Length: 298
Image: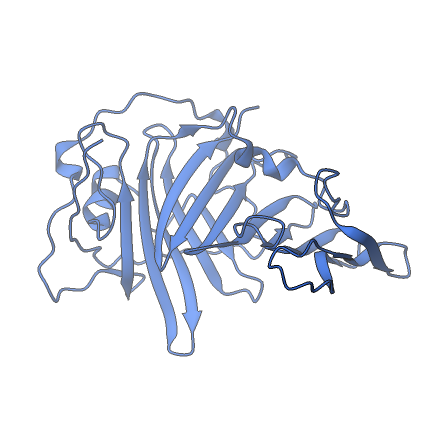
């Protein structure tokens, strides 16, 4: 696949978001009815070169980064894409986003525009630092199938289950500690063990293997799980993983450690369905968000 980098700008879009506190409701009632269709790349949607010194803005705030990924065989744009032109060609209504998500503190975190028929989307990921809000844009083409790749089905996991050590992993003196609340729900899980001395220092100190913390609401529904595992036994990616759930107990947002930044999953549900209709994956590469969007098979 040939790749070409393009500098570009995203003009100001007045995003009257109406952001949802739980973040787990789709923005359109027909969210489940989308079917995959072949795309013909519109020529006027090609990213254009931006003049140096001109800002890109959304919600009246300058974008710090923008990424557009096409599936077109002859073209792929990555960083500094012209999301303004892409937004215009796709005909999105800036006052009616497809999906929105608020962070734990209620502050806007994600706004997503998506055309289910044409399978094109544009989104903005909001970040916050002491200097204020930072906006990072991303656009994507083509709804990738989610049939066999395991990462698209991770929402099916039993999040209340305690981590288990693979029998093929050698850990001596393995032990666990748990804390439960007054209703018998597990709130804290820790496991420890002595690892094989791989550095040749003859040091055999006990180390933490797994950790998991659980938070429940007043109705006893799991609302958050914080997970961690030692990088001495497992890959660095997913060595820490934070999961958030809605009032129905469905996972709606996850953030995990990645060597070059972080990775996130947003699960979008249609009504009260137990399974998500869509899943958005964002790869944060040092401040540049690359999006992948899939329809979850029924």
